[in-house]
Length: 236
Image (cartoon, helix red, strand yellow):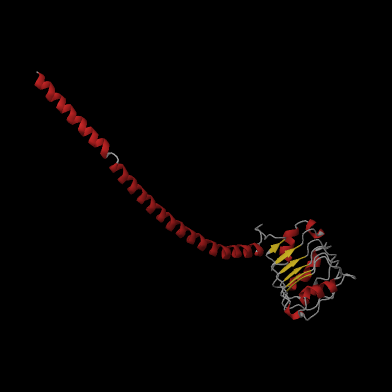
């Protein structure tokens, strides 16, 4: 599917001004240019155009609110100056898997004053000597290059943070149900123990009644022995 049709499909009968996130990965650009995007996407904050066959960004429209741009696995080798003009508020830019070879190509990104994270994985530029030091020096506003800062600390994963927050939200009700179950178990346990106590009392009463007969029999045996002793005395 070509890029223009894919964008039309992704709109789903909404106006471009309503779109905040747009993903058109693996669609096709016939002439290597951006197609289907217009200045009407005024609220767009996240755009993913991965593996589309782009070789130029010349037709990229003005996207003043765009903060994250995914352009990995395309054929870009330059024309990055367009980004500073059309997307001045970018904070994250992924150019992995493109044909960027020279450090000078990145000079155009100096005007992206808000740029914090830049990815250049699988670009030829990464094989240059002192690649990381050179990029950080050229783009002092960048904190994370290829996912790590200058001290090799990994960039935080915003998606993981979101999942943790969702997990905490889900954990609340689960805990409440657990407390209710514990209360029910305590009530059931209390009732069960009361019944046990009643059974033990009944059993104890039965035991007290049963030994009565043998007790009386033992008393009669003692009396009989006494009578035998009396008979022996009379004979003597």
